[in-house]
Length: 285
Image 1 (cartoon, rainbow, N blue to C red):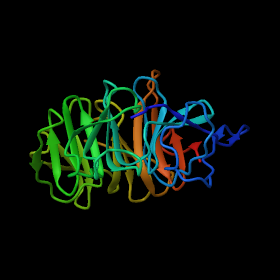
Image 2 (image 1 turned 135 degrees about the horizontal axis):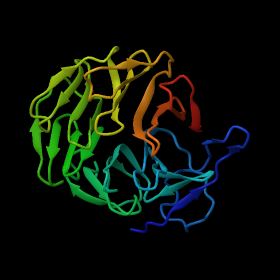
Image 3 (image 1 turned 45 degrees about the vertical axis):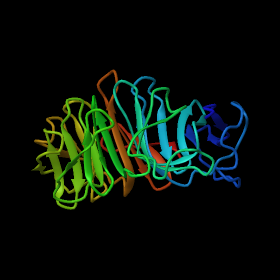
């Protein structure tokens, strides 16, 4: 399978520094492997995840049309067109994903657990191809956790163990140390034994999405659309006053200077905040 990147033209609002995602008229599955550098408009219809690559710091978008990397003023579509319903990046740079194949790929339906060791250029079906469409997925070291209607954990990417959980998770997040968080209708749940047992955390408002910024910092987006932050692994919390709104995805990271960056997909935009939502910057629109 060819892994040449597809560069897309996007409008740049220079004064605001905003990278636009103007919808184009062509089909996203019309050409799976155009030559690198060819101009091709690709309609991005839904962003399932927006995270930083831990190595390069680039913004990665997992979408209904595949994986995109923000490079300068461009979005570069990397690898084959496929519906990435879930996406995670481990600290070692390995990419994990699940979802559905594009029309011109030879991947199974559903994808099962995919892995990429080359920044999303090529993908390998690690396990559960044709069986699992993980709508929630996270990883920490050797452990991968996914939810496909059943909560499953794996320490080798091939053999999976079924786990019980009080309610279906909407989002999963694993800390560098392996502590697992799940947002559910029963509240924000925590596991320190790979999902075998769970206890409840108590953010100031119910959490819809959750992410780890480092080994001790947890960020949640609440039902009120606010950012809740904990620097002690969820024991105590602060709640931002600003309302970001309903989000489809959330990620968080610490910069070299220690500042906390929170990235959220809100509506058709990818935004970030460095102050719990008091001010926001549009990264992608």
